Length: 260
Image (cartoon, rainbow, N blue to C red; front, side, top):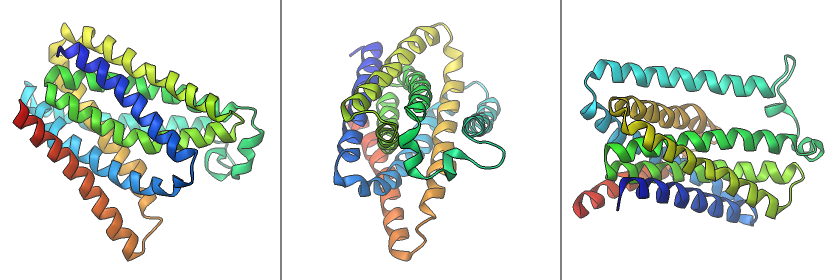
């Protein structure tokens, strides 16, 4: 299988799978499973970043210091980008993104859903670039990276579905909009494949940004939500699922290594 084919298949499969699973959760009574998916996603993201992406980035780079600085820059970049997104949704006195009651979304005539789709499309485009950079570095790394992205996309897509439904979209419209948005992953992957062919020295830095993205999402966005359930049973469950996410990345890496 060629690298370009792997990128396209991983992008398509990842988008369709994550959206289909998210739709099943969002449209059924299984939405209470989403916190467990979040814990698993944290492990998958951290496992992919520290067990696969960073080792490859340091192996390919000509300067470990520059790559480490890229990771640090990436974490700061995602902090600023998230602040801009929050600023876009918030006013000085209060934040609509966090403080408004859920039923307010029913009367926004689709504005919240539209903003979610714009942001999600850009996010998917960046995911495509990350997948392409990983595949260009190593086919096995590409597969593991795609799996980690799928793991964290599912709980995110569940949230997107619920927002779209609250914004007045039908279940069919919400599914089709999310599916259309996922095409941006393929577009980003194909563009990055051809761009990075002539810019091979950039691959370690793209991997550094990819690792920064996964670390930031896991540590800054997902882990704080777990602290809302401080009881011992919930903590043990979360730790177990995070370990399961890390273990699944390690197992995937081991199995792919045996097949190579």
